[in-house]
Image (cartoon, rainbow, N blue to C red):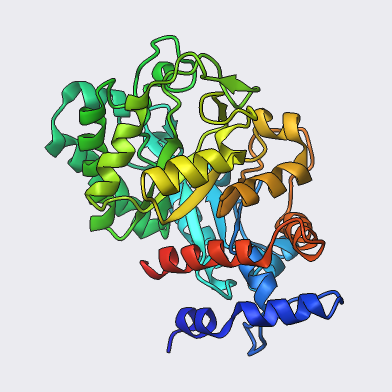
Length: 379
């Protein structure tokens, strides 16, 4: 039996409940690398955390905390950025970094990256990686064979590097030509829901051909927005259109959806409490899970973006996101670069405290863990 199956089958909610009822703190997790065991609650919380690793380019002796967090189940995944790529011998360096990160993991790690193409392209040609045009270019070309070709070439590279998740495709519609975060960055295939769905499915098929999973974004649709959630609150109450849900409906119906990322956007028509989608049970629980029938993993967009971090506070936003139905929380350490980076240990302790004091239920953690287990079992 593989480590994945062995430990996923071993941990169960009754153990967590008994420990919670005993009214004592849980013991620190012990690494399973040398035959130890992981505490059930600690492991399940850790699987819900996905981190950026600042400007780390090598996993050397200075990365003691990161190694410990990976080995002891304090995080379930990592996201890479251009700052993690060396300027010389980039391919060899990045492949070794990823291999070294995985070698310390007690559980299979999500190794993810934003590789949409065009302006959102971390693996640039100047570092020796393949050229990747934008979604807008492929949409204008409107040749599904070409779309598949470009993404298949990219996904083959991701597979060889050891990257198993790509935060693509974008399925936002190019509705607002003044949109500063989607349209002006050429991140949308088209204004047509049908065209977006077809090109997105070609993208997903190409990734699956190489054993790489994909994440649809940004639910329930960022294409009509007039501002950027990296900078602050984005209100689409007067601009959002129901057609923005159609790509999700089509891709889900055809069975090509691996996971979905939420948007930090507000719409009073979705949620009268005026909460951003990432923090809204009505958006995630009602629109996504009940109305669209989605049963898989929900990723947050980066929790450090100003639309969340500056408006709701760090701990409060974590609590709200999990209770709303987010399964994996992203902390990219790529937004507020002038501040000390968040750590998996810090986030893990916050979530665990929220569970122990009753602000997040053990059942809610269990739900996310079960979904993540199924997602990871696919690779």
